[in-house]
Length: 285
Image (cartoon, rainbow, N blue to C red):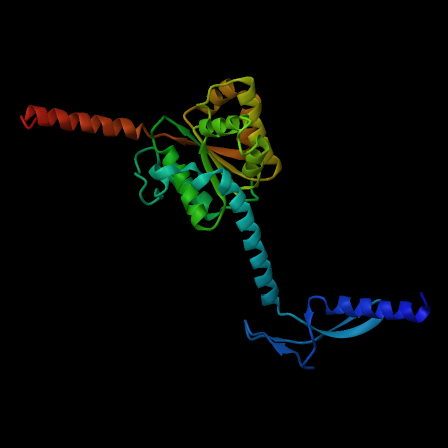
């Protein structure tokens, strides 16, 4: 290649570099952004010793392009997660629950405040989240589902599933006819913005269960992604049943929140019993 040919190629390269990301210069004073009305002046740049005047795009256009790219990435990520976790397994019972329709009873006040606070300050890159524990039937799942529904409404990709259902879902991949693999599920659990595990500790324990639960939590931890969990067990009982590795990782990621209320389901059952007794006594039955 001759010297002139090399020079021509270099000039062409410089022209391509300086034009990349900028529009053709048509006005020496700059251009007015059609989106925000800001006058964007020309910019003189030097590349490989040569000066060029180019017309940059407005910062708001750059932000719009970045936002569009983020929406596309979220769409792809959500599509992959949703394929494996249809409506996040919230189900009809909990898909309409909110903090507003949560029944506040003695012992639930702090849990409700912390759940609301968590949603208001949610950051998918902050691994510190919440572990609601307490007596069965006292509203822990309602609060977790309310967190899910509030964050989904904000556009976040959330997975909500019980620990037992999650383990069964992973086990189903062992079937040769399964469309998904265990790695597919674990990858979806790793990339979602928030993983909500309901009723951790209710599962039957085996070496495989212990290793799988730890792997799920540890993967989220290493990806700097949060986990919200509920349990009918105390933190000491979680340690005794699931082992110190899971206990330590869970407490490293979650602030334990004791929901001190009694069982709401028991209260409803007692009220129904009392109502029936009254009907019998008055001869209405």
